Length: 174
Length: 153
Image (cartoon, rainbow over all chains, first blue to last red; front, side, top):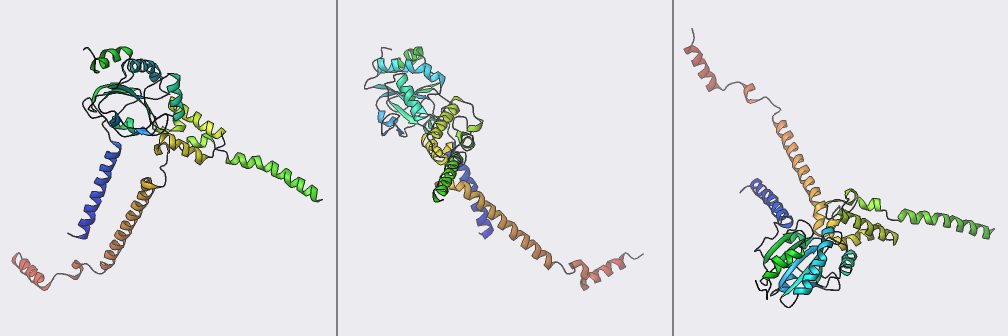
């Protein structure tokens, strides 16, 4: 093989490599119902340390992406807290992920709405990107095996939680 | 006399000091041109979303605390990650954003230079008479004469 051929092949490989890298680093089709939920660790919004959805394996988890500047998030927060109060146990919890938000704003939001469920912080939006969110709020019900069972792009209402989420949880009569 | 000089110097320093501090004070307008609104994907300067408004409030607060522009940008990176910067940082993998275009330009310039040199060298070799200027070979001349004789009317 001549030097020119080697240079041409290397050039093509470089271009293909850049394209693959670009797709791998930016492209994400997100998760759909039935897909495994992303489980990269995230820092806690309040307190030190980090947590991953993998830590909740064996439990049902309602993952709620929110931000303090998001108006619909304010509307659904009380409903999520009420649902947490009614259903949280060793087999279920709501987990909030404060996405692309200022830490202090997020903490103020949690305090203002008296949210008792665990809160993680996704300041750079990487977790939102992994999930493929299109905005906030978005909600994902993850089953004990770590797979997404329900997906709501937008706020969840009290009715939705009672009629669609509650029946799937352990101990439900339906 | 000495006391008067000291007094004048002190007054001059007192007048200059606020000017120096004001010159170093970070400005929201300047920072807005250098950072992004992460939710909108545009410069903060152009963004009007609720998240952008909160980002401006955050920057304003840090300016009021007397933070420098670099400190404010560091604080924004701590909140939103590297992508909040309009220009990527000049360290780590992000350095490639600056290095790759320069290397690509140098390679292209070198390739162009080599191409031009070869083209000029080829032109110099061809400065003499071309193959047709030397006329046909003896064999071709004989064949031409034979053909002309065959068609001679």
